[in-house]
Image (cartoon, rainbow, N blue to C red; front, side, top):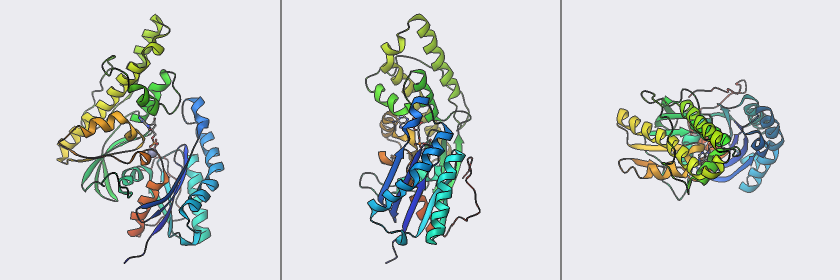
Length: 336
Ligand code: KG4
Ligand code: ZN
């Protein structure tokens, strides 16, 4: 029997500081420190995010080791998010990972955050089965919206992406116009539950092929709300649930139409979703209704940023002996 592989994963690309320990594909611990500081600013403030990472990183790693009941000497490699993300935030996790790897004399593994989101599907769990290759992954987060052709664990190709805002940004910016806190996606999801999806109509983007655009939708939402507010100051309060449901319906429809088109173009019927927006209940529900696809929905806790997915990607890179080096730097616009 082959030896178990213990990976420490470190994630710090945006506003969550996370550390996880995986034994092969099993999560022994996955600790996440969220940063509430950004709520009142309506979005992530990069400088505040880096400072919070700096404060959180050591306690989070210590707790991950403690919960996993793993001694530092048992770790086989340290996997960290190299990019994409906010430079200051990435640097905290990256520098910590390098120092830690040097300290315990173990290899360093650099991970692309978006690949981590996709590979979160392979974390062992008793709810969902992992996708079979090849599959298409709709990767939707606060900073990215992509359709990825996944040929193997580490062989992926972006076949479509947003030309402006990401889907998560569309949720967050709409929420801000509605006066909701950051991150707005989960709140829009919550308020939509009792709303009418057809109450308000917004502009549909006309983007060819597999690319996305959300900026026109954002303008259309802002225009409608501002016009109606001029007539009735209490418009948002009186229509919050219907507004949320209509906005969510518009964003989810854009995503689903492109997934269908991508399947048509490639002939691939195995479809997965990943990233923060894949936590959206309406997106999950609507995709599961599409019986022509084999749908793979990630476990809720691995949708938003977490280090377990980084350690999972680290595990496959470890098997491939695809190690990082200590001279590489964090890369905010890292591509696959
Ligand atoms: O993947 P993630 O945690 O961080 C990035 O890599 O960006 O994604 C965060 C994004 C935010 O825009 C947040 O509003 C969105 O995911 N999000 C949701 C939901 N939960 C998180 N959007 C819609 N519905 C949700 N339930
Ligand atoms: Zn993410």
